[in-house]
Length: 318
Ligand SMILES: NC(=O)c1ccc[n+]([C@@H]2O[C@H](COP(=O)([O-])OP(=O)(O)OC[C@H]3O[C@@H](n4cnc5c(N)ncnc54)[C@H](OP(=O)(O)O)[C@@H]3O)[C@@H](O)[C@H]2O)c1
Image: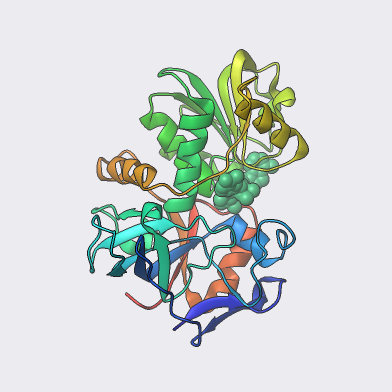
């Protein structure tokens, strides 16, 4: 079958759309999905460059790329009752190095959910990884109360544009930080206040926050100590010695004010996102959709670190 693969680690042009990739095996608790579209995430770039080859991503080469997709179920395992052949679904694999930007992808039943009924599958593919990251960072790490004030640094990108909308859906006062070109975009997502990082970095904003979600992952909690309330929570997306140490301390139950989100795909979280999307509280923004034969360009767009919302790939299988 067809698949987006790389035979060596390196720049985006190592990606190839081949037609001799092995068809996945169905197990009792899995589903097979004929993919219609997928999204590109910064982690796809890091894995493709070989960043985690000695730690979490030791699968041999060649490897298939991609972590999230939307498509239609083509087979269900014996234990699976919640999906039928033909269902439209969206989901993310928890396999570290991905492998779902392929013609037919295998998912554990808990990694996928029925797709939102008011989105095309091309748009639904933009949701699973980035929106679950935003949901898990805000709900689980920040654990805010309604009316509290959150600062979102990197509010215009894949995770950030969902974080703004999810924080509003949870009743928070949202302050977003983005570049000068995206002020109106972040306002249009519902942010109450928008700051331009080229004029005022996030750590210099003169307000008090109950939570800071540092999507761009540039800072540490101590750099916000004057802006966070005493029990205010800082959440990063980027593993660094300080953010890893903070997360370890939080998991030991000692101090939960410095967190590192580590997204996991969960059908219940995908259901929450589907409901918000169907209620009109959450909407993906896709900057550009590329045919998979131009996947290298889509990866290069993500490498720019200035994507507005998401970029997606279509697999020509819909
Ligand atoms: N730990 C996890 O589970 C997890 C999950 C998902 C993502 N991540 C990580 O989270 C990060 C963001 O992911 P993403 O998908 O949102 O990436 P993305 O779509 O590439 O977003 C990048 C955004 O960063 C903003 N940005 C660039 N320079 C900035 C600066 N100096 N200060 C503040 N913002 C700046 C850009 O805004 P402008 O264009 O407006 O400049 C752009 O919108 C990545 O490092 C990714 O690896 C981690």
